[in-house]
Length: 290
Image (cartoon, rainbow, N blue to C red; front, side, top):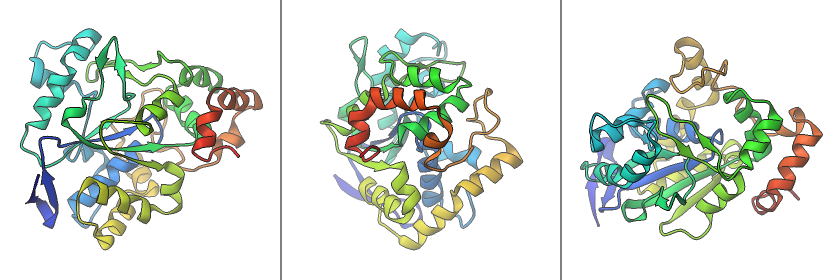
């Protein structure tokens, strides 16, 4: 690899492996991470509009990527076509001349119908954010307009997916515990694992780790400015003023709370018991249970 200058004095190493996955189970902090990265890379001195963060990262469900690589007749609802073409899509992305391609994913790091979801040969690393599943479940239920009991069943289902649409392909999330272990266990590329709760407690340290591991110089003043520009209050205000294109039609707000500890307060004992029974081992491993 060799180093090349990027915008605003940033340096990135150039390799064929230039995709950095910004990975998480849904409603676990991925948007916050992308907002931070957009503001850090922008360095504009004012918050990047929340509806323009796709200028700094893309997503592996974005149908226009598939149409660009596979042809304009590609149908996002054709799961087999998206799976068969997936590696071609991201190989094309890796050849776009960018030093680093930041790609959001909610897919598990595994296979579906024997087809690989995350191609390691073009992957530089992943940043994986996980969140206490009790808190995540509250946001998940609101986002997808399901009751918490149903949400608990869905996140335990190995076949759970995010449905395709006219602008996105299907996403294969599966079971929450297996999603976490697929990214945090043995992988063919390095993975930085950060808990949502640790970002809340000390965003400077957490995001400094992200910047360092992606391969950019760590500028603490710039990090602090990006943290302020991507705060929950700032994002929530922008959503109130302009809306957010990633909000589910079933939910009133995308930026709903941003807090930790809600699950224990808002979920019924039966739902809490179900989540603990299904995911207790992984929750314990990452400090969510004694």
